[in-house]
Image (cartoon, rainbow, N blue to C red; front, side, top):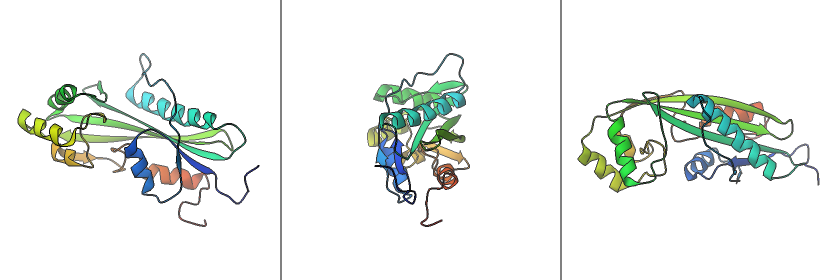
Length: 205
């Protein structure tokens, strides 16, 4: 059955991340979650910014493709790559790797490259943007880092520091145009994209 011309398209979040889901819930709009199946391995010679943008769009398009043709959907894809001194930082997965990350980053500036893509199935086009957040880590002793890791167990986030939680105590400063970008979904940029796509973000518009 074709979509009503007056009905907004379904909104899909192409992510398995509970943090991105919680962020999107702030906008108080209905959405569904579809977990895309893509290879997230960076390509040889690819910059962090390009990696994040490519993966954000790949997630959005893969999720849209899994829904089948003929339905109007807007699909949100997002990806984040963290770097310091040109080195890429991934999700630690274990306590030992998380501790090593925090030890390496203390007293340093870390760049979080957050990419966002909004794919519109109606036109087959995508809006994409990258947001850089500069984070300065405090120079803390190992005992403090261990205490933090045991308290928050942030083993599923790049850089091992949840700024929306106790991880804020690890940081000296955060510089960004979008405070939600660091958590993984830049809501200021997303709001702009949704409005440009004609989505009634704040009611009838």
